[in-house]
Length: 161
Image 1 (cartoon, rainbow, N blue to C red):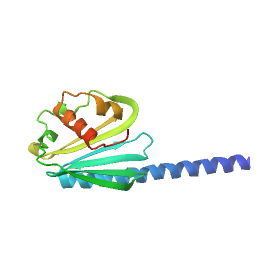
Image 2 (tube, rainbow, N blue to C red; image 1 turned 135 degrees about the vertical axis):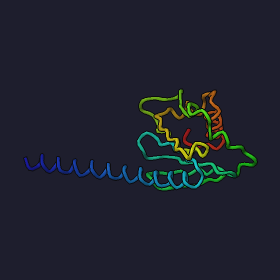
Image 3 (cartoon, helix red, strand yellow; image 1 turned 45 degrees about the vertical axis):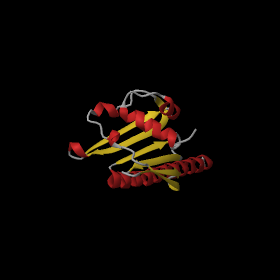
Image 4 (cartoon, rainbow, N blue to C red; image 1 turned 90 degrees about the horizontal axis):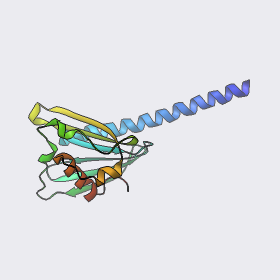
């Protein structure tokens, strides 16, 4: 009986620790996401199933900054200058353009979109979708928003293969 209680206690402690670690990773990613959202008015994140690897990126008027994170720790930052790149596609008048109609699956990577819509009284557009990341990179989208986003994901090799 004592062995059973000891095993049960050990199991509870290890599960609690695992949950706490995931929570800390999520908190670190959320802080970076909010910082970039405040700075540039947009931030995107893709989180691999398992919550170990994630990528966060943001567009400014002159560049795209891409952060790689493993277990909530920044492992790299790549900045690419965007010569005369028009990023007006980020702000869509029709909010239906932000709805992802393709590539959703039940147990996929989590794709997070955060955009501050300045023309609509700084309304926060916040979307979260479980996606097949490969599908997001290969689908021909009709939405201007997803078409441009998909092109940049491929061009800057955001995410994993």
